[in-house]
Length: 270
Ligand code: FAD
Ligand code: A2P
Image 1: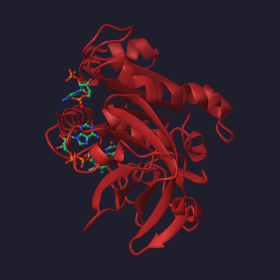
Image 2: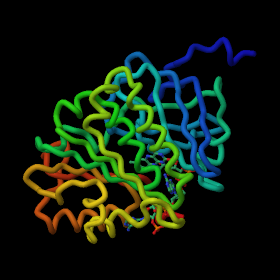
Image 3: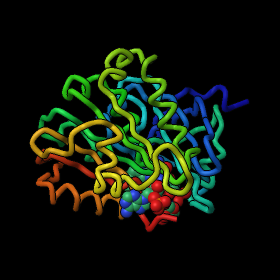
């Protein structure tokens, strides 16, 4: 077929037109996929980029975190499937050999350079907010900068934790961080709408102290700890208040601080 003769990456104006290499479905509402990577495409670990599907008229574009490591020769994305969603109602049907548009200008605040130096790095996520952290925990520089990296992922159900579970389980086989990540990374997951070994929102588990008990670590210290937060707006706002009350300051690319936040999606949530 004609599609088989296309190059893995074609330049298309402000976008790259990239071949889909692999798709994995986790639940009715979650999947991940990998695409060919343009040779000239560079991003900083933790950034996001606009992606979309070509069609009739203007393509529908949405922000997506680059979930794979920055050194990989493919790009990885982790996605929601929104019922009737302009992009994802189509995107969820992609298969290897299909094409996805990837913007040329990655950006974002969940980058190491937006944080001051520190000892422990906390990566706090809910839902698809874990996507940027899937990139960060595979970045060798993270383990050079921090003594410990603590990744948290909270979802409604255990099935929705599959992506982060597999990610963390696979780190020991990673070509670059396979030795160091198992030594330095702590993974904490919880569910909020069914029973499990750990239940509850991360905000509540922090406030009650159960989080620290469970990971067997000291409470937050603004002098030594650095924090990245990615989830719904409500989750970001609650955690921001918690950290500001503890004396943490919000950082940005222009002015590094002790914590940074980014919305996992816009809108009220469903
Ligand atoms: P939309 O019309 O965009 O969304 C419809 C509604 O669905 C939204 O109003 C919201 O209530 C809900 N919704 C949208 N996205 C999500 C989500 N991820 N989780 C829960 N509810 C959601 N989405 C990803 O799946 N993976 C990512 O890595 C990702 N990174 C993002 C980074 C940034 C900085 C931003 C702003 C958004 C990101 N999103 C991500 C959301 C993404 O841009 C789209 O909203 C999503 O793909 C759905 O697109 P849609 O056109 O199908 O529905
Ligand atoms: P809950 O089930 O108690 O609402 P969603 O699927 O709605 O995007 O939520 C993803 C996860 O984020 C769920 O476990 C949800 O818990 C949790 N969550 C929702 N709002 C907040 C908040 N304000 N602070 C912390 N966690 C939240």
